[in-house]
Image (cartoon, rainbow, N blue to C red; front, top):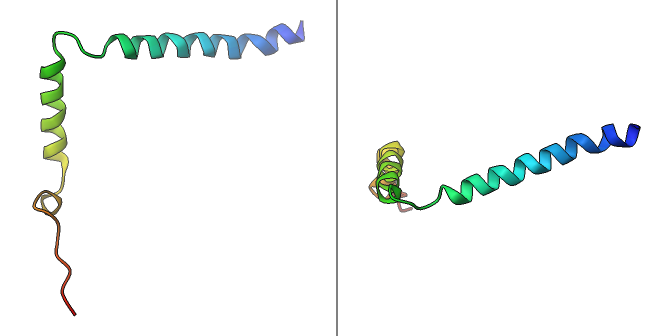
Length: 62
């Protein structure tokens, strides 16, 4: 019976991982895709530091 207790955790994790991937794939797209993409783009553009948004800092020439 040790083999059963050794095989149960990986089996449960494999099933859970399969359902997680299935949920991720099914939630892509849909009616609200454009709205969700706009929210993410706005959050990412607001999270960037100002120096990076303006093209970066130029290195002084030697």
